[in-house]
Length: 74
Image (cartoon, rainbow, N blue to C red; front, side):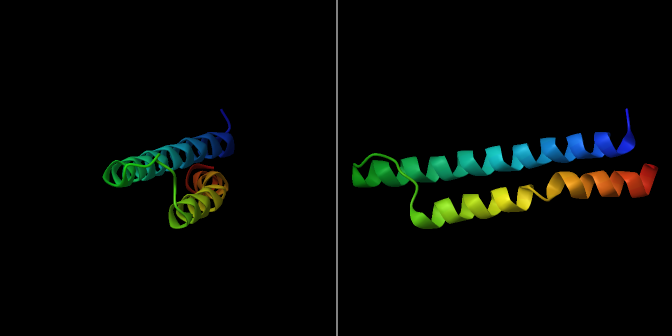
């Protein structure tokens, strides 16, 4: 497999893992807050912004991994 492609796929896996972990943590916080207030669990504005900024950051992770793999092993 091409080194650049391998790096991009590894970066994609890392990015998806980061997004999944952050989403699960935010969902847990929303459920705990909803349990205290006896309302349905929803993300507040800060949590939505936090998740959106992480997604924007994770767009750059696969190209960064591809470039780093190419520089190190290419």
